[in-house]
Amino acid sequence: GQAPLDLVARYAIPLGKDPNAGLRRGHALALGALPSPQLRASLPAAVAALVQASRPEAVAELRDPETRRNAISALVELSQTAGLVATGSEGGLTTPLFLEIFEACLDAFGDYQTDNRGDVGSWVREAAMHAALPLLR
Image 1 (tube, rainbow, N blue to C red):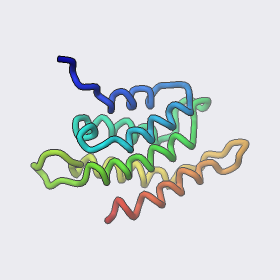
Image 2: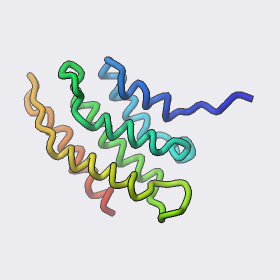
Image 3: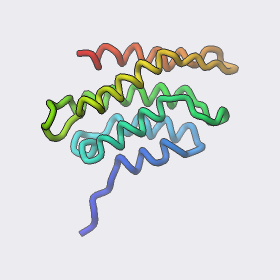
Image 4: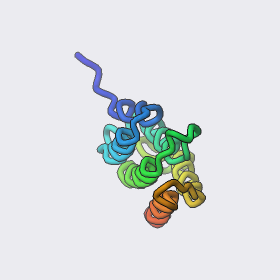
């Protein structure tokens, strides 16, 4: 038989390195929309990819506020789909993973990127505001 397709890797790898911003935006949203069985198979990889995508890119030409906004939104979706688990339990967000997600959202409050469209970092900050309440519930 064939090994099951690792959907997390399929979306996470291009999310981290593809030069096409539109593709990165879509891959961020796709990671957040994955169903629980696919997410749980590679939850740490999904969280790591989205946390990385939520941070400003090192190369200025690759900076894309929409990717960062989508990554923050996807982190909230992912955390609601996977759910928190008690220490030692199987199959959901562990405390360290949850803290990684929450810290990424807190970091997003400091996104003040501007370009010819104005304060594009505000899109990321707004996503972080919408993320804070569901993460704290």
